[in-house]
Image 1 (cartoon, rainbow, N blue to C red):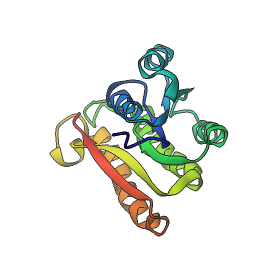
Image 2: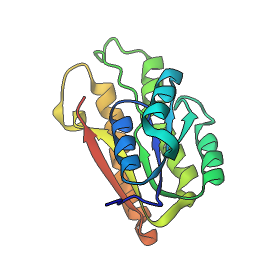
Image 3: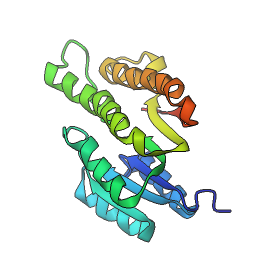
Image 4: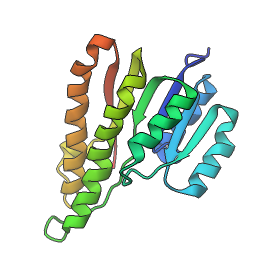
Length: 181
């Protein structure tokens, strides 16, 4: 059965790890997938693994132009049936040693950019579509040396919960998944 036949899904951070695994599954079930990544080698490898139903976009979540770049790709391909906000970074360290630049990077990549991407891409998500936001079990675990990461993932989790209510009138489901650190 091709559950995702004639569906277009964008996955940020889709060129490796969990994002790539999800992209493979979606393509195997008939989806056209747009994946983003910041590492050229990962994008090339992903293209080889995913075949003709993939569009790859070099995109670094630290880049202020990320949302506009993704919108321009979506405009060329057509509206989205699904959006998976998966791109993230994990930098550990005791709160005493973590510097402001690291804090800014972590919140930019894990919170600010996905929120800006959601704002920019929401008009292009079809009624009845879905949004998946990758959070982390670290939000609940209280592990040492990852308070910054945990806080950033808690923030995007809270945003996803609010988006679920905000986009309910358009029948767009917003759900979150937990990735173990």
